[in-house]
Image 1 (cartoon, rainbow, N blue to C red):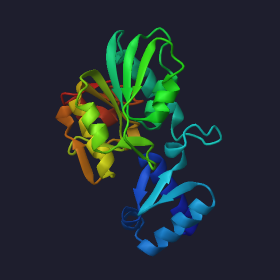
Image 2: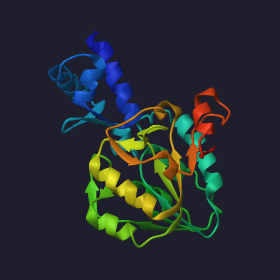
Image 3: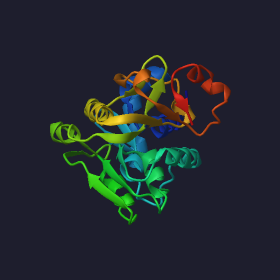
Image 4: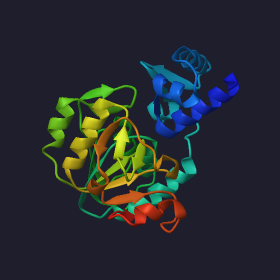
Length: 249
């Protein structure tokens, strides 16, 4: 495979999953780890990705307030956000993760919605700060710079004192076989705590992330109440999901 094609494939994987590991890219592209590391270094030097230990992350994931950077699949994420808003009720307690899809939702919150929002994402909290009818609380802790989320035991302990009406989670990978999965151990532990702190859980995922699996499981499918994609609920890609207990939006 030509270097230009590898670079395109690497950027697509980063756009899709936010974070990628060199070892996984090497296996997918059938090249050596050294080749992938050189590719990522070149992409980082060109300002297209951010190099991290063992792999790379997307710029829109770590710096979504940069207006010069295009959010991957932004229109699809906006469609998902519009659907997710239907689940939000006045006087409810809402719990959110971070990520670009959740940020699109934060930008589109109805002005009339009166609710309390807890989030582990400083960027989501700042985005929600302009809504006069929302009470916004940031669940603090150590900032995971590669994901711009608060992680660690301090964050998890605070979440244990909350019982939200609904939790809104982004997805790096989602499948019927393995449920919601991710690459980052600390983010996974916080997501598990978010789920435990909520009566209902909605996963917001662009359709490209369906039927994909990452290394660490967050929760099985039967823990999730809603799956929200940009697709019509009768789309062929969702056929197997329709046969599950999930409510599709």
